[in-house]
Length: 61
Image (cartoon, rainbow, N blue to C red; front, top):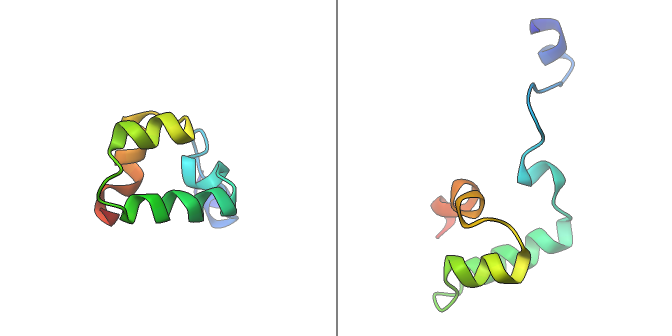
C-alpha cells in the first residue's frame, strides 16, 4: 500500500473533485459564492447529493 501511495494511487473510490469536469467545477464554485443558492438548489442544478456538496465545499461558503 505504501509503494502504491508513493506512485500516486489513492485507495477507495474517486471523490467528486477527482471526477468533476473543470468547467462544471468553475460554475459550481461561482454558484457557491452566490448567497441565494441553497444546498438544495445546487443539488437540483448539478445532480450531486447535498451531503457530497457540503463535504467538499462547506469551507468555501
